Image (tube, rainbow, N blue to C red; front, side, top):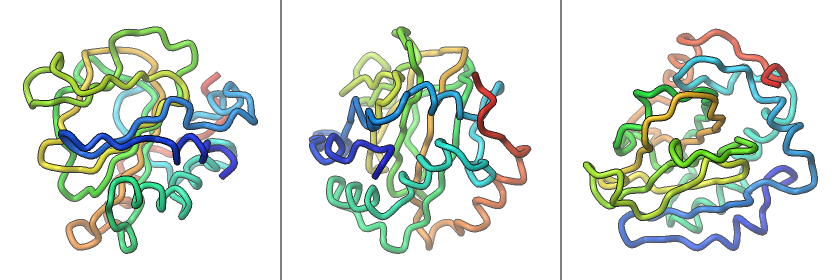
Amino acid sequence: MKLLNKSQLNLAKVDKQFFPFFHVENALSGDFDPLDLVNDFPDIKSGGSFPSDNLEEGLIKKLVQELEGDKFKIILEDKLEINLKDAEAVTTLRGFSRTKDGKVHTDSQSKIVTVLLYLNTNWDNTIGNLRLLKENNNLDNYIQEISSKYGNLVAFKVTDNCWHGFKPYEGKRLSIQLNYIYPKSLNAHKFRHKLSSLFKKIKSGSSS
């Protein structure tokens, strides 16, 4: 691993009280300038998730490749006690949060695991931070709040009660989401094709 901080990821403790998850504040290596990575993020000015398939060569594409790589997969398997051998990795990017985003929800049961990595430098907002919740109807009853600040990563096993959300926030909010998909419950190839057909090609290096 060159962009991900393997030592910090390995040290992360798993919380299993409500649903299995782990959080790392410094998930990215300090061997490069954070602004180089942030400036390579696609210039996404609208809400929704954008596929990573069409990323041009650059730091963001390399980071996605590391997130989808075997070394990180092993960390996820060991910590969350899951088997990803036959699962398909699907990575999407978000660059803008809308006020309607962040509603309390659990992820689709077609997913095995969700990983969120935030890339927001100078983040000082108290809203727009992800909250992992104890119940499905109260954002203030949370297990942990995950800052959207640069380098924060959270990974959780998708369960019936993996409730999460954040208070309404509108504005620039950079994140990368990795999911591993059950091969029998969702045809990953068709899933990727559907995503790609919905959005125009996104280019790196234009968000500065």
